[in-house]
Length: 487
Image 1 (tube, rainbow, N blue to C red):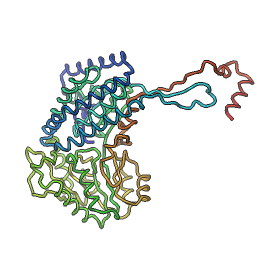
Image 2: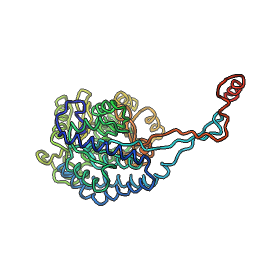
Image 3: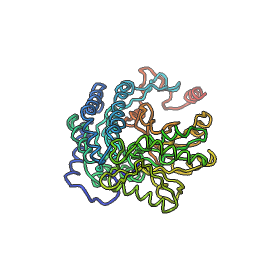
Image 4: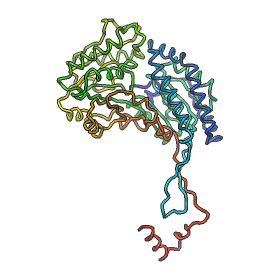
């Protein structure tokens, strides 16, 4: 993911934020810590009540969330908010409620002959107070999703949302305060100073969603307290189209994943690798798809704007740099509209003949720009992907199961979709997370519950046991016993 506001200066001098904000942050943390110690293992019924409250909060305020997000972006598709924020969260909460009792059960393990008749098990207990630093691109789902699974695991949570979406962050603070005691869930608002102080708190676990660069700084801050971290980062997620795959189908699924939220999605296809002979066909197909998806852009409520002027300028800089270095830009603008000024909408743009010297191929794009690269053989395409940092997602289009298996086994990514883009994020039973520079850990599915739980190993000795046989003084009997047990 691209820069997350509020933590982008974790290692910098403290420049913003009032002393009262920092004092309030410390107070909220200490109260949450004390509350956890007074109730270290919430019951199943308590956790279910909290998940039910979260679902009711979403249902009650979904229209307000959609409006706040749209105001923050200057224009954000209400339907995209309903799909990618509200629907995914409600589905996630339904999944958590369905599986919560099973997740909470102790898990029996095998003790082995040497420890018989002792019984062993693993118990999942809450970690304590969890910190969540959430980004601006999906400011509700990427905030409340981690908060919800942390509550399901029995924790207390402090949330630091992005200041790049201030109306949404303010609304999150308001509605969570109405539904939850501040010792259970609190939202803190502020800029870089508060973000730095937040990351430096001695949380029992810290989840950060944002860029790889800022993730490194967050990890450094957390290391001061040996705080375990889950980092949901990003990078340049590749898409490979095999020569045998129908180009029209590939173009539709690539376009759907790329231009959702105007490309401001951490798992959006970042660039496409297509056979040399198929490039023109793919370009034409993408033009047709965009014309069908977005017949107009400027006043089209389905096409989302860029979150801030600085990010709009960043994208413009990528295009200018690429064109200046020899790339060809193809704007997918059905009506030829001028998208500048207050709208902050950016024309979907294909970039051809790009190379690694261009900024657009060095940075995560996080916008509606799509470089189209070519390859001669599938080995060449895989070599290109593998020569770069491991991505958050990989997309491969091919109906041949043997080649597909080969591609999956020869590449490493946080997740993958076959003949599709983005949708693996919404499957709750799958873990979601990166690998290497694209992230550490996961927080969907049962893996999410485990992320926010401590796995305690427990051995329960029987009343009658043979433990005394391996106690001093050692002698021949001890040696015979070890030989017997060791085979």
